[in-house]
Length: 329
Image (cartoon, rainbow, N blue to C red; front, side, top):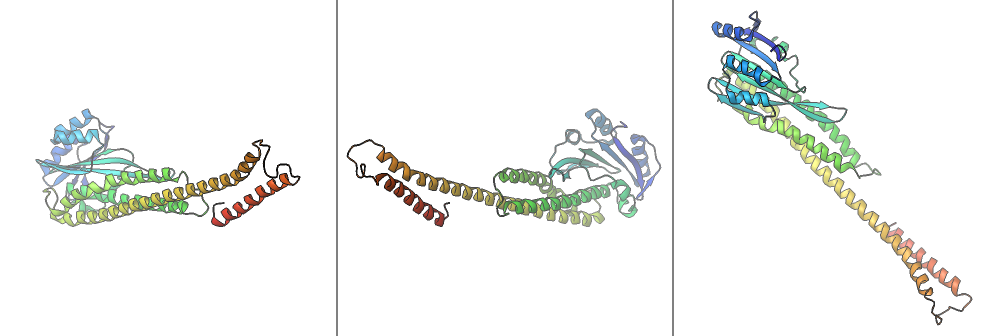
């Protein structure tokens, strides 16, 4: 149990208070106090470990199953006496310009809040100590922890979309740089588009749960916290708009790159056709005079050979000039 427990504490009037180290005793003490709650933080618990906690906290088995399995869609579910919310966390790796995902899940009850984290890409490090510096906010109860987690996760989304925008600007400059080869960029653009799709799967489904929290339809959210959740929802709207803009720009860049490749292929085909035409003329003339007929014009003339060579060279020079002027060579 010690392996999975990140921290456990009792909060009363927004301040951390001394209490039992055992989470079940701490929960009993919080319930006895009436105006306190327990904040239990877990990291990647196993099924057996979370079952022990769920027995003490009275968690719904479906929510417990989701918390153990992970890989859940962002959502908010309400059960008798509790609520369960899933948020996807994102991590940006500048070395490979990639985005990885994790998850944080929250159980909210009358006198407890439990956070369950999966993956290393979590922006929640230091959140507890930061929130403890705002006792007025923390005094609003378990929903204050939910707000703080959602706010930090969404703010991290903004940082990641900003970083992706910088990477996309570099990729766009590379695609449209004059004289640069355009082949091989389509795969990179498609890989970038997959990164943006991963971000979209984390941000878009979260909009509806945040609006529900801001609307007052969730009993465990005090009225004073509704504007806070509305602010987080506004920030998430900005994130979704940025993600949509990234996706549209990527589609435009991919189309432009494919058009460049098509133009380049057409240019290559024109060059090949031009050189084939230049090679066809002497080949045709040499082929005619190599047919070994006895009665052929100028076959026995002393100037026949230089005349044939001269005609070949002249026609080739004329064709080369024509193709050069037309841009085929």
